[in-house]
Image (cartoon, rainbow, N blue to C red; front, top):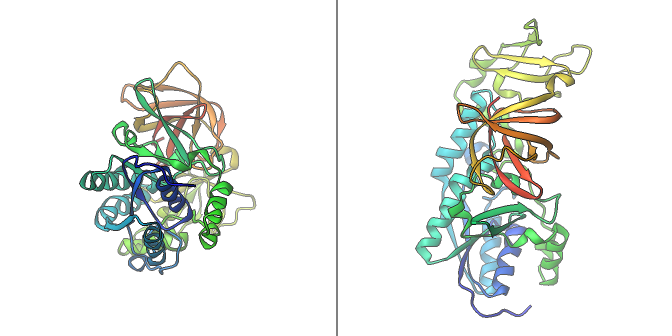
Length: 366
């Protein structure tokens, strides 16, 4: 593809992975003046890990992003956001588990750390736009910027973008939204980047080595095991079933690794940090028909739509369930599902869709 006339300056978040790299190349070929930026968010060494390339922070990935930029003749820089990332994202992650909730660090990071850092640097560099390699689309319609699902349903990342403001979306580009992952790999290969085209990807939390959140919590909270060990597993009626290792080490819906044999499969139904108990029950006990959601952010509409059926997802890879929304006196969203939904976990994101369009989302509280 031949590069066309300059369309202006765009700051592209480059992790060194295939998605952000192809994102930068596509914009470069479209005629934008690309400036690549790699955000250093976390050191594995500070959390007991190594430098292996599984997150967005490894030295190898930073170097890969820099080399790509140099080869194509556009600028590349590194911005260090470790302090704000640690103070906000990591501390929140620990705090949520200590409160008996299951956190969504990627949503918070996008909303409060990455986009803010990108927009600040874009302003400093005179860039009109920022861009990322997320599989999603954004358009302007009826006076609002609307996020919609990416073409590749298996890779769609709109779920983690519900917290973005209209001001942020006005300056955001998602070049990969209209492609599938195999198409992106082929683009890299066609441009002579065979090694890049074969790069793997991680579904782990970037600051938790080997996805071992229990070990991470133990290292971050002094004396945690002594504080929480010896609590009770209880059933739905409050009867004691046995001892557990500490309430922060369990998540809603968990079946494996409970360390207790009761003759039939049991699941974590509820976590009670106030008395260090973990409620176990049958699989059907996980099913709910309603929930409450706090701190919503709306994307497609300027108020909660209460007159339409919406698809609500309670986890990233959740297929979703049809539901109706209302607002209670406290300002929380009440979600009434049309079917029973399993594994609703306080702290996770509830994300609402109108077809392929992202209505918005919030944090599950009950």
